[in-house]
Length: 190
Image (cartoon, rainbow, N blue to C red):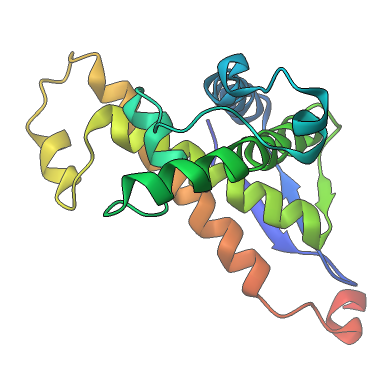
């Protein structure tokens, strides 16, 4: 798999060029993110509550990766945390799913793809969410490169760590491209 290329597009936005292997890998990751973020148990039975985005979930998710993506707002006050979750979790889940769907839609398009600012924000959100979830699954700590170095070369976890590193690199390059100044018209003609 070659490294993806993110560059500032003339006139604004970021241009994304991925090879087929990278697009397949990311499609799998963000498809899994959609599955992780689905939760019919927090959907309200009351149609008005559903329209207002008020859920029934008051406890943090049992899945540690999902709990990292949907943390308690008030860890020291369980009652306030439960009430806050009831009013915000459905909307937060939907925003995270929308970000993953934005990436998936772009991955289904012919490359290169030009991301406008709202799409760029969705990509950054989705990459961050994927890294957080995978980081929890791998028990990533500050010294995670030492964790990887301690693995046997045939350890199945090595692939997951490589995916985590790849996502990290992609996110960093995307942030850099977003922060690069747009090319000047003179440089674009040269």
